[in-house]
Image (spheres, rainbow, N blue to C red):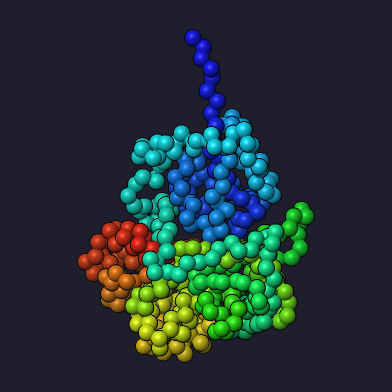
Amino acid sequence: MNGPVPVEVLKQHLIDPEICIRCNTCEETCPIDAITHDENNYVVRADTCNGCMACISPCPTGAIDNWRDVLKAESYSVDAQLTWDELPVQDDALAGQGAIGEAAEGAAAGTTAGDAESAEPAIGGSDLVRGSVVPPWSAAKPYVNLYNHKAPVQATVVGNYRVTDASTESDIHHIVLDFGKQPFPVLEGQSIGIIPPGTTADGRAHHARQYSIASPRDGERAGYNNLALTVKRVTKDHHEQAVGGVCSNYLCDLKKGDVVNVMGPFGSTFLMPNHADSHLLMICTGTGAAPMRAMTEYRRRRRLKGATGKLMLFFGARTQGELPYFGPLLNLPKDFIDTNLAFSRTPGQAKRYVQDAMRERATDVAALLRHEHTYIYVCGLKGMEDGVLQALQAIAGEAGLDWQALWQRMKTEGRLHLETY
Ligand code: NAP
């Protein structure tokens, strides 16, 4: 009784190497480690991915949302995907016949998928999505992917200056790009891709690098079609070895009048609420200040036009001289923004992180947590995410709030946004 052997067709999850900006969000989000990468590409393991979709919304570009119907026995290997410059074409004979891997069916029934089914990840435990994957309900609708690496838009540098003290090691630049008459609509919290000129050692074109926009939707200069970036010159890697960051050095060395190839905009969730009485609790380190600057400036421009919500900022840097925008920040009226700075390497003083400053202001942070119109934004170093979530948990607990329930609610309501690298 030998029946025909069923030919299994897999709906294989793939990442488009042409659009991907290698931001690592998908790999961090995947609850079952189905995503990996090398210097060239981010790829999905066909035998591990269960189609849980946790990675889809957080991807700023949409590169993650690609699928090909393939014979399961001939699914694309990791090694093959790592060499791709573009996605393979869909075999018409198999189109529409694919099913997501077996594990996915189990996941849908709540039987597999590892941590994906657990109600909440423990802080410091699973990296399952910890922040919102939806925008605030009142956020303006963003435009995304108007330009890609094959058809980038050209922006002209109209400003480039250092925003950290000249005596410090941190060379952080405020760079203003003008798009002239070309459409480039952006919202606070979105990012863009910069394509550095030249090629890698093996002759491939450089990948685009992602930078958060540091200016509001109506322009760095209000009414102009321009935007600002906050870029730190990379001179060392994570192990303190000397390395020249390809794109950061390119950007920091640009002169007025230079022309830059830009992709994007990207991002449809890390956006600010538009309703005037919404409160913003912003927590950032270093160049993670970029989106906070954008949101703060947008609110400042709307302040006299009816925006009444509170702004509370926790901002960490090594020293005062290394905190970008230190001067302008302190000039903002105290009744407009409640600014709290934390310096970790001030000579003669104890190390202080943003989460320490948050704990010191526990009463006021708790008051914001209680408010259903409060939106939280965390941006900066990856390492701060655990510390900030732990601080929020402790502050909520002391105030008699059920943090697990509140955390879940804020996530689903688009009120807790994390962007750390
Ligand atoms: P940095 O100068 O290395 O660090 C900023 C501050 O954060 C320092 O005081 C540092 O203290 C502190 N810190 C270190 N670990 C911490 C932890 N676990 N919890 C809380 N604070 C901690 O920062 P950076 O070089 O500017 O890097 C900023 C990060 O933001 C980068 O990873 C960047 O990719 C990311 N980012 C940038 C943008 C952009 O548009 N440019 C946008 C989003 C995110 P120590 O003295 O202990 O080092």
